[in-house]
Image 1 (cartoon, one colour):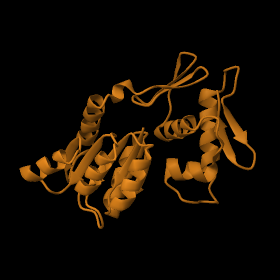
Image 2 (cartoon, one colour):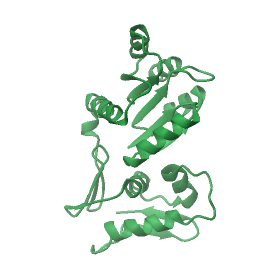
Image 3 (cartoon, helix red, strand yellow):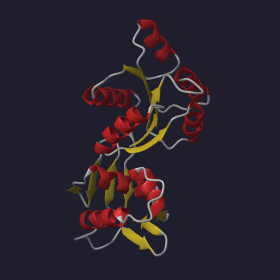
Image 4 (cartoon, rainbow, N blue to C red):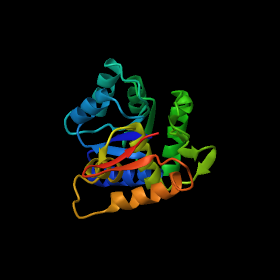
Length: 222
């Protein structure tokens, strides 16, 4: 599942990113309301976590703009404002839920599950590549009917590759989308995790799904 975090406070954004990544989410963070509108309109996210107080365009305006543009992705607003009138304003602007800071991750993820159920995320189409089946709503993977256990990072890497099936994904792209690194030429973490994935989704099966694209990166193809 892909989540867009809109938060201008660096420590909170890092806290959210780490929490979501530990649960296997693919995370993109931005600090600007205008950037949030641009990315939100472009699609590609299953959930938007939206701070109310932003330096350019506030969260209410971002939410209204996205809804006016026809964006239906679930939005949860995060803010220190806890007055009843504030919560009403947040919900009236089109947000699906409203959570005040500070909060516990247990409550946040419970609210996310509730929001996603209401939004019909339980019926999110599975991703199928040959005999590989990925269930984004449950973070479950199986091949030929056999359940495969992945770590959160392994799952995030697999889901990104699966959503770009047949396309060569560069190492920089995978670093950016799965680990949040813009460019780390000295790291081989992508290759290491691809090795982990291969052992779990390809070893013991007659056909390999995860392929190396020389000089570029990797491609998942059923």
